[in-house]
Image 1 (cartoon, rainbow, N blue to C red):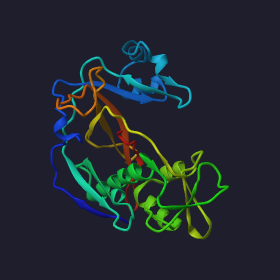
Image 2: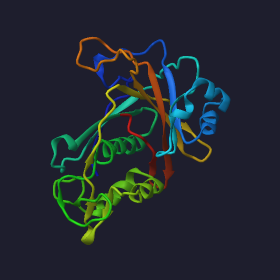
Image 3: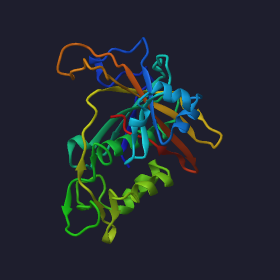
Image 4: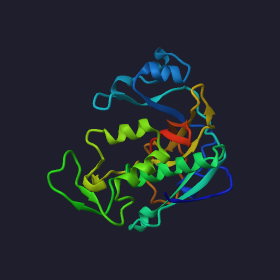
Length: 277
């Protein structure tokens, strides 16, 4: 497992630093969901109200993804929460690439230490191996593998033995999350011969309008899980021209995604998490 260091609790700071001004006057609140009924239930409103707030709601539906994207969910401005966070540094010193050895993430301060480590590990894994980049590097190419698999991970990768990789995953994620990832079509990873890891190799871009993210306060649910929202702040103004200039940016939109941790005999496991950008 990686090494961890934890800061003291502190107020959240937006990830773009001094380039971003905190949106004191509120922002537009948005959410993506599988159905309008789901949105209405979560935000204690009606489907009719969601349609009124989103005159183009039919255009926001992706048949490919089967979701309604970025629906406005309330008319009044949303006040961005300022709940305390803890900065967790995750370090895997055996990884060959300097950039991929470390990830620094803020997580809710009200989580216990084990939950903080699990959530920070999930951010680390998803940013480096299952998000911005997908797959382990370095790897040795193999022809004729199914799906998008390119080869097997070699020394210097995050893991080279599937048994060790599986142990990491089960220390961080719920069984359901792991099953979903390993059984995707196409799958990002698979177990190869002699305990090797078959891996894909891919990259994606990020949202240039991303300003940072904060969290609502974790709440214990009747099923024993901890659930809260990751509040992703962006600048959707037509005047936004990127980060090269000297002017500061005020986020105008908050898109919330669900974060869920479930209890096990060995501590909390991440069951739902999306990267914020």
